[in-house]
Length: 362
Ligand SMILES: *[C@@H]1O[C@H](CO)[C@@H](O)[C@H](O)[C@H]1NC(C)=O
Ligand SMILES: *[C@@H]1O[C@H](CO)[C@@H](O)[C@H](O)[C@H]1NC(C)=O
Ligand SMILES: *[C@@H]1O[C@H](CO)[C@@H](O)[C@H](O)[C@H]1NC(C)=O
Image (spheres, rainbow, N blue to C red):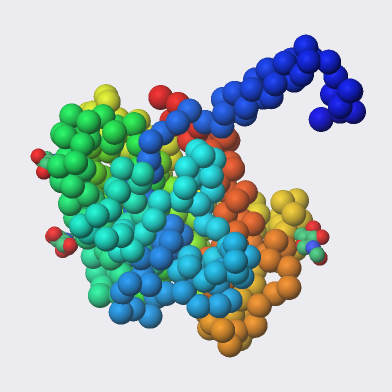
C-alpha cells in the first residue's frame, strides 16, 4: 500500500476498504471457478501417502524424500516436495485431498475429495501385484465412497456433487516400464501391448463414469523411457525408445478412448494432458526451461544416481530446482510445478480439448 493512504481522510479510507474488498474479489475470480472436490486415482506420480499404510517396498515415507516439502516432511510423496496433484489442488484453491488409507472409515469426510493413488499401480492388476492398490481396487474403494456419500448427503446431492468434482487420473507408466523391461518388448511392435492396456482402461474409466464421474482430468504418461532408471540400462545412456514409443501410442489411444466416451455420454467432459509431449522438451533442451541436469537423478546411488532409489543413505543434489528428475523414476517438484501449470492454463496439443481451468469452470 502506498504512503498516500497513511494520511488519508475517512472518505479515502472507505475507498481503500472498497479497493481491498474489490481486490479480494478479483483474486478470487482469478483463481479458477470453484470445484467442490478432487478425486485422485493413479500411481506414484499422485500418491500422497497411501503406500505408507501398506506392507510394501514401494514407499517414500523416509528422507531424503520431502526435503523441500513444508517441514521437510517425508509424507510418502515420491518427490523432494509437492507432486502434480498438489499443484492441481493449489490452482483450484483446495487442500490436496488426503490419502484414502489415512482416513477413518467410520467418520471420514469424503466430500472434500480423496486421493486413492498408490505407488506402483498400473492399468493392469498384474503390475506390481501385492505391492500397491491396483487401479481396479482404487475404483472399488471409490465405489464405497459413493455409497458413504449417498448415505450422508442423499443420492441426488451426491450425484450433483460428483458431477461438479474433478476426477484426476494418472496411470500407465508402471505398465509401460514393466513392458519395456520384458522380453516381449524386443519384438518391436508396441501396438498390441498398448491396445490390451487401453481395453482394460476403457472398462475402468466407464466404471468411474457409472459411479458419477463427469469431469475427467487424464494425465497421460510421460517419456518414461527417459527416466534415469531406464536410461541407465542402455550402454549409451540413451532413453528407451520402446518405452517412449509405447507412451506416445498410449496417450494417442487414451485420446480416442476419451473422445469416444464423450460421444456416448454427452454429459461427460475431459482434459487430456500429453505429458510426453510436454516433458520431452525439458529433457532435450533443459537450459531453455531453467534446468541444468535432465539425465541423472538428483537423489540416488550409482551410475547417474539411477542404480538405487532415494533412501536416507543415498546421495542427493544441492540444487533440486536444477534437476528434471528427483529419483530414478520421478520428477522433481520443479518439474511437476511447470507441467501442472501447462496442464492448468496451457493449450492444445499439450492439453486438450480444453485445459483444466476451462474444465473446472464448466
Ligand atoms: C482385477 O482385480 C479386481 C479386484 O480388485 C477384479 O475385480 C478384476 O476382475 C481383476 N481384473 C482382472 C483382469 O483380473
Ligand atoms: C452409489 O451409492 C448409492 C447408495 O449406496 C447406490 O444406490 C448407487 O447405486 C451407487 N452408485 C453406483 C453407480 O454404484
Ligand atoms: C539452482 O539451479 C537453477 C537452475 O539451474 C539456477 O537458476 C539457480 O540459480 C540455482 N540455485 C543455486 C542456489 O545455485
